[in-house]
Length: 361
Image (cartoon, rainbow, N blue to C red; front, side, top):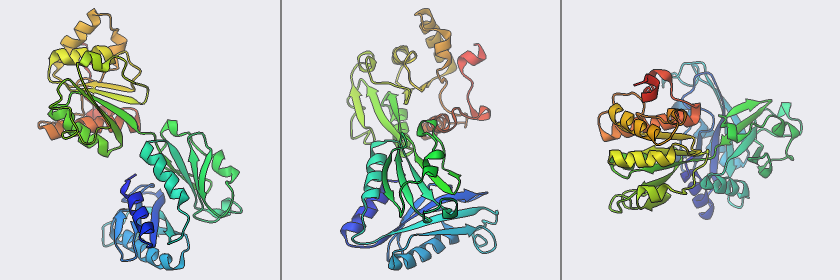
């Protein structure tokens, strides 16, 4: 989630200005945005964030401005047919359900503050929004419940206590679910951010750090050169580790939620890094380089006792097959592979580069 939404909300409250929090809570069929998209609407008609653009977004803004005056929460449903979509080419039969939640001066914003703190810290949680109150007696459409990783109620913006039905259909965030709807409840998971350790702060490492931070990876960078591994070149990094590769990686905190990339400036550094990372519990280990270089490194590590099974987990060559030539293209291919692995478990076979060991070369 874009943290600027929370910043905009806080600024509006401090300025004693009303603002409407709008969220896409359910989609069916083909739609320009999927559930989880959010937008703030200000009294002057300006906005932060987007729900997909076009006439649907314009209508949401129009209704949100009206609700700002009334202070009422409302659910809006749009069918992308002749009424909504013709001018924008959205005639696809999809359906979008929006939550409009006005926040006015003097409103209790504890719910939003708690949500912001969790997301800023990368702590997993789930929002449950009642979108069909007829299925949940005693609730109102738009009631919101913020649940921790274990299902504990952390905060509520609702007219009723937490219904049992909300917990009955809650999926654990460790399974990395996408937004879903069950029994009249929309579940919007905010997943734990994965740490990305980039070994090598050269041009590729720098570009990968920039792109990966924008798609919710927490960036750590390791390099033995302070002139490359510094806050000026890598402002997105949460941690910079300058020192010999061997020393820097020894004892580094790596768990099953960690991704590791090896993009150093040379064969020896790559091999040294892979020696330390191959047997780690990291969810993903990838290494850049030509197939010849990778085979030489693998052969050396096999001779040093690293098992073939362990090396078979290493993603090398690195990146999806998109014909990359330039540094930005290479970085895009790498980050695309990271996203596919995080969200899908693996990259689609038709664009994944076969590993050296898969080819038996």
